[in-house]
Length: 197
Image 1 (cartoon, rainbow, N blue to C red):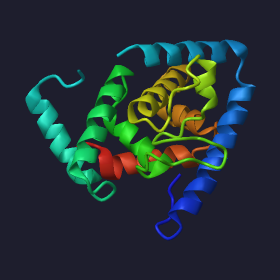
Image 2 (image 1 turned 120 degrees about the vertical axis):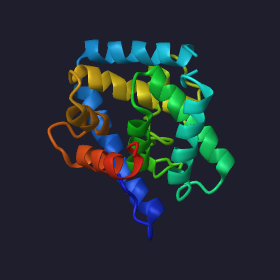
Image 3 (image 1 turned 30 degrees about the horizontal axis):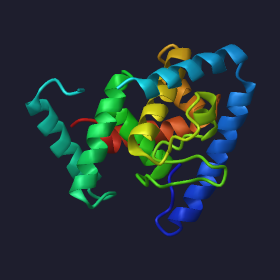
Image 4 (image 1 turned 180 degrees about the vertical axis):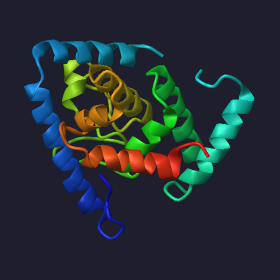
C-alpha cells in the first residue's frame, strides 16, 4: 500500500483499511488449527528476546540502509533505531531485513504511528486483535519492537505455509491471496530501493 505524497494520510488510511479488511477475512477463513499455530508463534515471539555477525557488518549495513532511508526519516537517530530493530527482528524470524524494509515501505511508508480505519497499526500494519489472541491485550502495536516482532512473525508464518513461495506469502500477509498486485509492489520496491547493491 503506497500512499500518495499529496494525500498521504487519506490514501494510507484507505489502503490500510482495505488491507485490514482483507486480513480479517483471510484470518476468519483460516482453519482453527492455522490460527492456533500462528497464535503460538506470536506468543513465543513476544516472549523471546544480536543479529549482526560482527561490528564491521553492522556498520556497513547500517550506513548503507540509513542513507537509503533518509528520504523517509530525516532523523539519523530514528533511522538507526529503526534499522537496528528491523535487522534484529528480521534475523530472529529468519527473514531478510531488506524484505522487511520493503514490506514496511509499502504498508506504512515508514510512519510508525500509522493507523488504518480498521485499526491496523504501526510500521507493518498489524491488526490489534492479535494482541488479545496471544494474551497481551495491553501491548502497544505502535511500539517499534512489538510491531516489528509481530509483523515479522506473521510474515514468516505465511512464508512457511506457502513453502517458501514469497509471492504467495506476501499476498497472504496482505490478505490478497490469489492476486499478485501487492506482492509485485513489495518485490519491486525491494529490488529497486532496498536490495543490497
